Image (tube, rainbow over all chains, first blue to last red; front, side, top):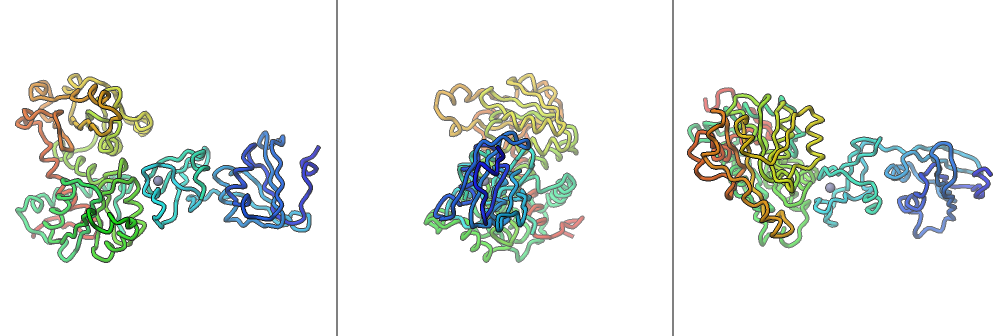
Length: 155
Length: 310
Ligand SMILES: [Zn+2]
């Protein structure tokens, strides 16, 4: 059975493919499509895939995610591939870009970091020290971040 | 603007240039020569937690160079009323030309530097960085040995929590030092720091034995074991007073070996050491002044002349 048949093809919207297996719910959370949205969302989890072993796929109808929104996924699904669908066909392909700094994507998880004061107004910044393996450090306190902890402190 | 947040902000050449400038400023720091290099400049001294030695040496450095100092006292101020660091820094930006910040939270110095345009010097942020301390330590070591290259440095005491020894180790390794880390097992330097030092090519030896490390040392850097670091009294009691250096212990030391300590000390360096030729900790504390003078000049873009005071 091909993956296209697992879930109905969408007419307009965004397909996020090659999400690491089990991470699709987190991806929804990071894209903020899980709350207060009326768009239909289909989720396929644990699909066999030559590229990443097993993967999740997320289809969001009637919403084209911007590059900025997609770059938020660099934390948990850096290798995801994204297609913008218009009228049942792929209109655009997008890649997640990690960049050199993640701004206002997640809060530093170190308990004594200056950014733990919720009233401090400057943006939260994580510096990308290495992409593979992913090594992120708070741009203020310099602490290395556990990716699991960061997923808990998505902004 | 030229901030100093961590030692990583400085290249080896820059470190040596600053130490050279500090050396030229020694007679000014001692009050023998008046050189108003920073006349008309105002330093904002922001100590969100107490550190008398650091605050006073910055104040002395600025005033000896003809500059002025405004102090923030956090007790009873807008800070105590819950003002954000961002807002406090906006005020300082308006009142001064350079800011020195000491803060209990890690990252506060970088955060401040991002918040304002004037240069920011980190005078200690939580368990993070304290680069001006490292610079004065390097100054003291070079003053005694005329070089930073290839020295055998023994670090003693609380190597687990002490940011002073972490930062100094990183800096020394950049100059090819051999490090001997002496601590009780519970206060060993974190493994990731040790492996980081080794990955920079450092020879690192770990030991619990101070006496056996003395004869080969060029520098012995003693630190205090702080009671407040321990979750309970029993754990502290096990290691409290474990290293007590006396003058007699130093009989077999090299002639040029120096004993350093960031102060205040408790009982790890006996007063009998004070009168030996090895004691260097009071000089070290004084060296905060010329070193911070050089750092203030650098951040304010003021060149220290080859012949100061002429
Ligand atoms: Zn942080």
